[in-house]
Length: 285
Ligand SMILES: [Zn+2]
Image 1: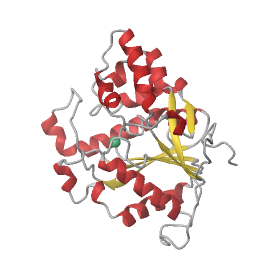
Image 2: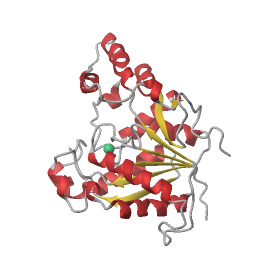
Image 3: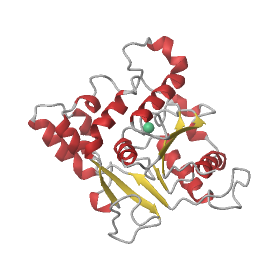
């Protein structure tokens, strides 16, 4: 039975839905487009920043805590459906958590894609958003998120693939969110002008491979009216985003510049050179 979801966002960890895709989800929800989020892991790794929690006590139940933070953030973003793919956070590349048998980076690709195919066939989205092919910053779960979503996107419409995972459903478009490298200097200049910290941008500015040139993107979506909703959704991730983080504290006028445009590339159908989509649904029924 169709749920009426039109946009499905697949992200590796709790908080990813609110960072690169938060403005997109808030914008389409505000337009009455039903949206869904699939989160591949429960974010069991990383530091615990919630000052109200004892990190030693909270560590064993961090996945459950972050699952609740994910639901809170998705309520703020107006997301209609939230699903978990059921894997474990792999941690950063080289982390001992990479070795955990349930780590997403070790998942069997066929099995993991099958779980997502079942969700795609249930929710029947027209448009799917995933990670860039290199995971944008090399995190093994982001790379795996791209591989699994790509496999599932094409398998979902094929009646010969995963015949036990529900009737075939063919989504029409696959996009990836991408960082755009020519923006770091612009944002840093704005921050410097106000005497604000730019240290979080330094790695991005130093690394010529972080992000792609703006001209290579297919969609440049205006989400500037939704950056405050996005900030509130990020704040719901209390264990992940420190209260004094730049994510939460930069002035609104800089936030509108820094987060006010969402950049995506279209993987399917492959765009002609220079082709641009004004909207993720432009030209669809
Ligand atoms: Zn992530």
